[in-house]
Image (cartoon, rainbow, N blue to C red; front, side, top):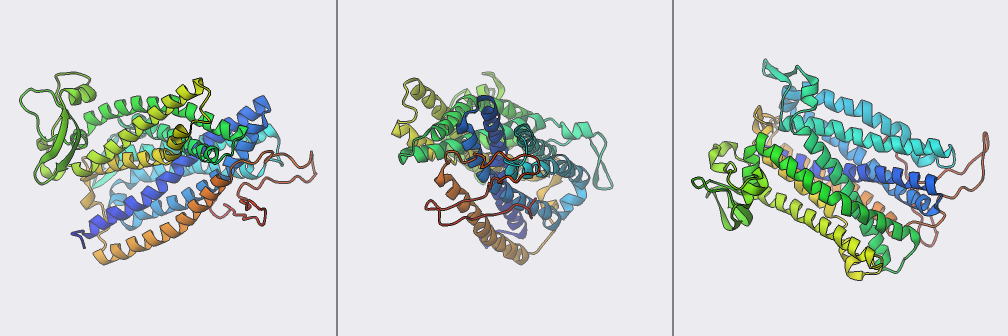
Length: 479
């Protein structure tokens, strides 16, 4: 079918499931820190706007967290079902790293999540704030271990190969491998930026529909400050990440740039647009800027960037895909920076909350951070090909060897179940967003006290606007 083999379907299945999964942790990371900031500001200023926003976004966080847990479990099982040879080869490294993530991050999140979501009127304010901070720290610790594992697959070190298996010899070298610091900063920052535009888009949606109150304005203001500050920082991190990739994965950089061959001693141009043709070994319809490729990638005007023809055809990533996925990511990054700068200009003119052209831009930029994350992951993972562990194990040697029919059936099942299950979850989450924050949403119903009943906050309630019903959901099974 379409010239695909069982290995291709296994890769597509993994790409499909991880594309769903990565969206939820990204928002979880950003929202957890956002909630900690909101509660901290409320405790410091006693401004009820921050409290109301906390309760509004805690509901969305809870739904998102639950979907992230469920989709993450599938990823773990796929290593054993579809990629058993990889697990046998490198499981002594990736297995412990993922175990550390569960022991240090997931247990921390799960331990304090119940207090954070249901303890608002049951524990003291400082203890509740501490629980929120612990959940936020847990999401970052989880990012640490997941990125350590993935980065080791990109730039492996600290190991020996004995009897065809990877044996760890230096765990510090394994964890803090050459690409890890850049990938960790890049992903964590991307999560914060994606969350900022998600929050800002929600505020813009309400403002465009005439719902203007202090809570909505605070949402937009905080989101645009984050975009203004963090989006340019992300661009700088991306530059350092690119230099690191050029050093350790030059074939990936050549594929990203669609750069096939160097001419004499001429500096490398930057190909803005074009269509890399893997069979013809050239980038068709290329629009080039002389010298700029060397300037961006080597920070000089005379050094050349390695070209794809310098690598054997079987070792070349698919330039057609990563060329464009990288440009989607970078293009959205520039749009984010532009949005942040425009918001600053409007803020100074006191029209940030009333400029409809800007609000429409903020609305449509809502999914931009998530799309950029997906594009970045496609660039990273497809650019690593044909290696599953760079330079050590090829992807073709890592699969379990299932038949084409088996992979076809399971892929179809994944597509149907994922769109049904997570489509419903996303629809419910967007319903919460459309409702918007309620004034005095988190106000205590009584003073309470030791041994006295308090009314628990219900973070997953999503009552209809006319108040005709509640829809209570629980994360107990997933936690």
